[in-house]
Image (cartoon, rainbow, N blue to C red; front, side, top):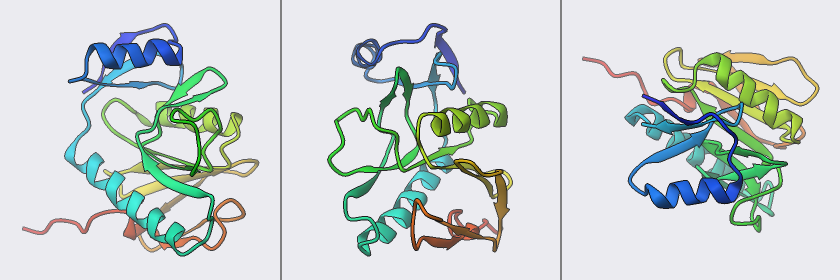
Length: 183
């Protein structure tokens, strides 16, 4: 569940001070810059790990030697604070990167309805991120956004390809999601 903390945009310094003041709580900027308090689910956490591992394994193959994968890193992209659930960023980026990630992944949660996620995707693309994945656990699907292209919806055995930004990356969408539980 998400709770709005601030409707005004905070600077990076103000955001870090908020996190320092309340270390037991988690905050995340919305697409419009408002700050919300997060309460991520277990599935959200598992998806972050699975996506991060999939991307890290690909990067370990030497695909993009100057890049690394990370989760929940605060970025300041021209005054827009964002915290992608998973991102591929330059290895030697600032502690709080000011350069758009090569890939930004946002996972839908209660606090991030589709409308909000799509607004975030647009912001990432406007600020120079060439590829954005919006991941939907409930439908086991994702929306793929690439700069200058029409968004695609992929699911199941559809192949997710990296294109020019992530050369050589290929995975079935089903690899992102944990196997369905059977009772």
